[in-house]
Length: 203
Image (cartoon, rainbow, N blue to C red):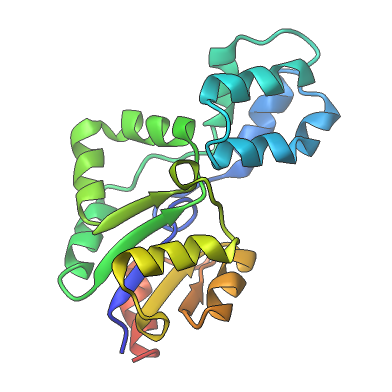
């Protein structure tokens, strides 16, 4: 019996297109080695470095000096606006389940989503979750099993009663190993509005 739902953010509740950020970086004159800065990206996603430190760390990987604001805009280009009906969908969902948000994200992306949605809309969206977990605030990122264990322990969740939705295969595999039931979400084909149908198969 599923009692708890943990949802990923980007790709599941808000559409994202990483191509747009890559194109925006290219347009600014990114060097090839920018995409090799995995450690910097991960440090930022786990809150080890601030937004300013992150932008300054990637700044040298361009052929000319780019303003930090332009770098930030390019970094956030992948984000679509928060769909209006998502909050309504979550409101219905939480009448039957305990609902949590778990996202590998960073301060800049969250600020940009909030800015585009507007503070009221964004607050309404966040209110639908019992608790919100962002990697940059936790110092952990998926697929590290510790991140799932923390969410479970914090809220007294039982793995078999918990259902996790994510578009990242590694993240799904990590959750599965802990006994959590999962839906490997495909943003190109799936809609979160079909969650009810998917859950029926797991009851």
